[in-house]
Each structure stands twice: as structure tokens, then as C-alpha cells.
Amino acid sequence: MQNTIQIIPIHHIPVIKQHDNLPQIIYKALEKQALKVENNDIFVITQKIVSKAEGRICNLSTISPSLFAKQLARQYKKDMRFIELVLRESKRLVRMDHGVIISETHHGFICANAGIDASNVEESDTVSLLPKDPNVSAGKIRQKLEEITKKRIAVIISDTWGRPWREGQVNFAIGSSGASVLTDYRGAEDTYGYPLKASMIATADEMAAAAELVMGKISNVPIAIIRGYLYDQSTENAKKLIRDPKIDMFR
Image (cartoon, rainbow, N blue to C red; front, top):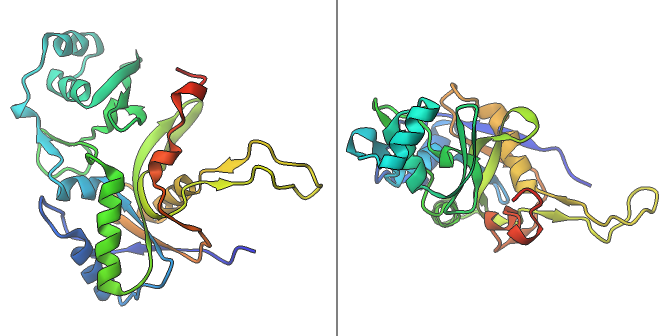
């Protein structure tokens, strides 16, 4: 039986800059909040501060758009430099309509504008890109936090994306370390003895979405701890959440 779950916002996180030591900054924020880390805490960290610390920030003035980017920019009334960045960060373009570009990133994510975002970036004419490898980023943060706190934890890096057929955006897990990302119920029986054949719950995504409830977009809370969730420790990461193209009905 699952115990009560807490979702705890972490305050006192300063503006993050390139080369900042995120684990140390997180630990200092916890000290200011008089919050002690417990075994099995799950740290949900927004992509934006990870990208900033890793230098995945780009000033559009440094971008020279290609002819194709210029053509798309005219068609969709977008900044041609921004379009050029989207093209560079994309493995393929999935759909372009209603002024929106949906692409597949080099990570395998399907999202708007290859995950490039101008919100919560301090400098004008500047955007953030997704981390090169969010799973590696999550693993490094987890390792350092475990060394500092002497506790066993998990880390999820989250980003906010839209969803087909649904209004509104939801936080998804784009990187993870230390916890299983899927709960597989296939082969189990439901309450009435019916064998489950297709039930796999994306628990990492559910945790990322739950954490956003205390983060918000304008609250300056880029990190939250989920406490009390009984997860399985695992060496798998968020790559497991990407559906195999062979069984993707929408390609």
C-alpha cells in the first residue's frame, strides 16, 4: 500500500549561471529552508536551470540562418534565427501548422520547437536549449547530492510540453537517475481478477507533473522534492519512456 506522498518546494535557489555547481546550490538552499534530505527522496529539477548550468544558452545574435530557415520564418512569421536553432536541434520535422513547429530532437523527444524556450532566461534575445543528455545530467546531480547528503535519492529532470488532443501543458521527465521510470502491471490481475495486458504507468512523468503543482511557472521554484513515494531503485533512465518507432502508430 502506497503511503502518503509529500511534494515539497525548494526555495532560495538563485539565478543559475554557466558552470554553477547545482548540487552545492541545492544543498545550501535546503539548509536555508531547514529541510533535511531523507532516503528515497526524489528531486524533480526543471530543465531550465540544468541547461543554464551546462551553458546550453544561446544568444540569437550569434546565429546565421540558412535559406530554409528564412523560408520557414517567412511562412510561419517567426524569428529566422530561432527557426535555424530549431532546425539544428532537430533530427526531423514532424509537423508544421498553426504557426507551430513540432520536431523530433536528437534525444528522440517529440515536442514543440525542439524544446527551445525563451521564458525564464534573463538576457534579452536569448533562449535555452535542452541539455545535451538529460540522463547524464540527472546522474551527475544525483551522485553529487548523495555524496553531500549521505542519503540515497533519485533525480528527475523535467520540462513542460503540450500533448496531442489535450489542451494545456504538462511536465514530463526528460532525464532521470536512480528510480524506475515505468511501473509495469502487465500480467497482474485487477480487483476483479481480470489479467492486465497493456498497463504500464509512466511514473517518472507522473512525478514530474505532480512536482509542477508546487513549482509553477512564475514562482521561482525550479526544484521540488517528492517524499514518500515507494519507487523501485533502478539503473534505467528516461530513455525508456521513448516509444520504439517500430510500434509508434503516429509516425
